[in-house]
Image (cartoon, rainbow, N blue to C red):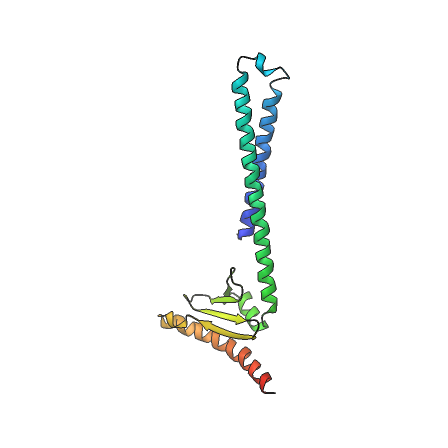
Length: 168
């Protein structure tokens, strides 16, 4: 379940709870039956109860607004990732789609090789080249081979293609 789905489900729950509390509040106010509250024995406590219910409703409304803002922010982040992905070469897009590379949500131009710790593949959109970072921190030889295989294939197909175009 994605973060966006979780936020939308949370928003639905909060709105349902808000509607339920609002209906409870209205039914409680209706129960006063239009009688002046200062004529009743428990007028002060009734007013305090209504104030507490009103405070609860306003807090819930703020939480709903907060969740809606988080949904908008997450949708914007997804649009940014998609926009960055569309500007990347097809080779990188294929590897992301088949799960070999995982695109970092915070920095969409940085990708991780699945099953490799720390090392990253970076797509520089201005220079149109693929680079790597933190490769020296890979200690496991199997992870190093896996990273090298993925990076070298991208390097051969993208960077050398750019180099050939530059020589023309």
